[in-house]
Amino acid sequence: MKDKIKIDIVSDVVCPWCTIGYKRLEKAISEMGIQDKVEIEWHPFELNPNMPEEGENVQEHIANKYGASLEDQKRSQEHMKKVGAELGFEFDYFDDMRMVNTRDAHVLLEYAKENGKQTDLQTRLAEFFFSERKDVSDKEILKLALQEVGLNVDGAMARLESDDARNQVQSKEAYWKSLGVTSVPTIVFNQKSAVTGAQPVTVFKEVLTELLQENMG
Image 1: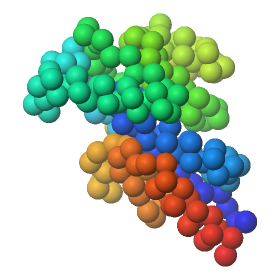
Image 2 (image 1 turned 90 degrees about the vertical axis):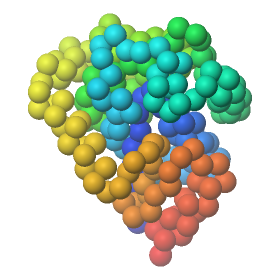
Image 3 (image 1 turned 120 degrees about the vertical axis):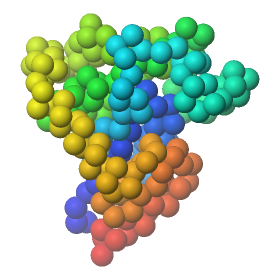
Image 4 (image 1 turned 180 degrees about the vertical axis):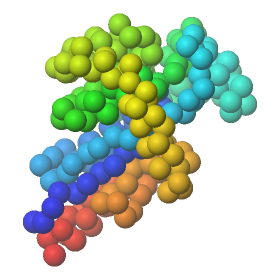
């Protein structure tokens, strides 16, 4: 066995299909028993980089951005709830749910990466937003997430004051866009093959099996 399989996940904290895609990937890895043979890194892709501080009602936001009717949205949400439940994840959509700005969350995910807790924080923030009706742009909520995954709250929050850290998120986003990433999740394997969207568990297993065989070669 040579190196670990490097998996880069380009995503946003408030992207439901990113959560579903990751949960399916996680299921594939766990069912194959190869947790020790993969290394996962998360990369920023803000779906709404210009979202104002107060956020926007999710229903209005999706209608404005994608032209989806309320009926379409409800159908889509029901579908996501069902898919989420199959993967042990709860999507709790509600009428007053707000889409929020995720720049701070991405700055903190970079901090978490340096401290080996990136997937923990990403997962917790997604749970906060989708399952627990929490505003992941609120600094108090972000502190709570940091605390729960065992990160240094003061050290992490200090990053939010750094222009460099904020600019770094934007340059990483620009980097992935320059490689042709236009939608999330985009999941890249060993920096050479990529799948977009929340693919079925079987697809992830096929990709991983192929890469394991290459690594054994």
